[in-house]
Image (cartoon, rainbow, N blue to C red):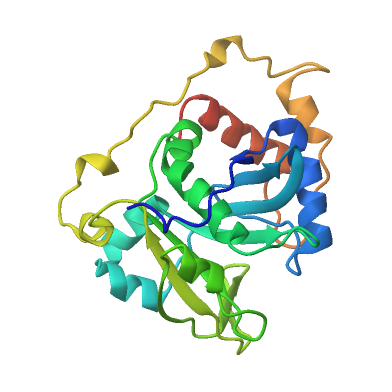
Amino acid sequence: MKPYPSEHFQSLIVRPVRGDEVHRFNDLLDEHHWLGHNLVGEVMRYIALEDERVVAVVGFGSAALSLGARDRYIGWKPEMQFRRLRFVTNNQRFCVLAGQSRPNLASAVLSRVLHRLSSDFVHTYGHPVLLVETFTDPMRHAGTCYKAANFTRVGESLGYARRNGAYIHHGQKKACWLYPLQKNAAAILSSDFDHPLLKRKEARTMVDLNRLVIDGDLGLIARLQALPDHRKPRGIRHPPSSILAVCVAAMLSGCLN
């Protein structure tokens, strides 16, 4: 599906944030967005520029673990939901910077992001995304830009937040919006059999772990031991360096989950 064609912005460029721009991206969200820069899960960051001037920033992360309105829209079974949730992404942040807003700019930025989003996920994480979800707070805004970009409002959240593995009721219900990046996205995600789109598109580059420097002053363990441990002492069984070393080795070996 193509987003609703907003006003043409000839000089508008929307692209992924480079590694050396992440700090600036975070600072802009901290300054201009009430939720700050924290993105969780499989993160994609985008920056929108006009004549090399930043006009908006957009951030995506992993989809909500459980969202009744979305799950009813898709119609998937619980076992399919958990196995295929990575094919749904959440637009966790979208901010047009102060002083840059004008008619149709927000929908134009969304249009350009949505056009390339799935292919960027394939390049970065080895799989596409078929559906985009997002939330808006009715007390702050009506979600007009999402409606203009052909998102569909499918219901409301129940007013819960997931923290430290538990659900906390805060009572602030949010409007839930969905946008399919692929025709028949709901049918593909709820199918009893894997559609070809759900199969891995791009293999991760694998590193020969026999060549990885583990020990020594400049080895992996020494570098990981320099990281602070913010956990509470009670219940700790393994040092963070050991846990992170296993994770690093797995990721270098091509593990996607």
